[in-house]
Amino acid sequence: MAPNFYERVWEVVREVPRGRVVTYGQVAVVLGAPAAARAVGYALRALPHDADTPWWRVINAKGGISLRGRGYGADLQRELLEGEGVVFDAADTVDLRVYRWWPEDEGD
Picture 1 (tube, rainbow, N blue to C red):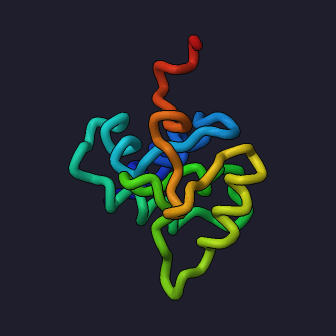
Picture 2: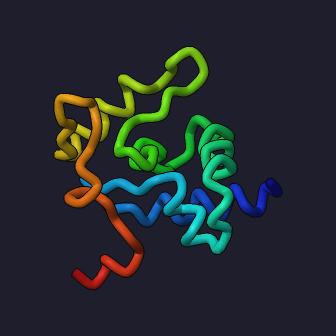
């Protein structure tokens, strides 16, 4: 995917409020590319280390944290989400019915 796509991913993710999550697939749908969930992951992986994009708010469609190469970042991601009030259940997943965010939720 083109760097322009990556920048668009980062813009969408920056909109996700504290204490809420989105899935890779949701970001792809918002961008009009519903089959590009994996590319969303690539875009997040390409984030500069000093970026102000809350990458930790993006989880998989099952409500879980997707492991990165060698598991890097999974513990940090969970810690950051829990610090924002996101609760994980016994299966290490987030209840998407409670914490999922869509851009149209902004008016709520």
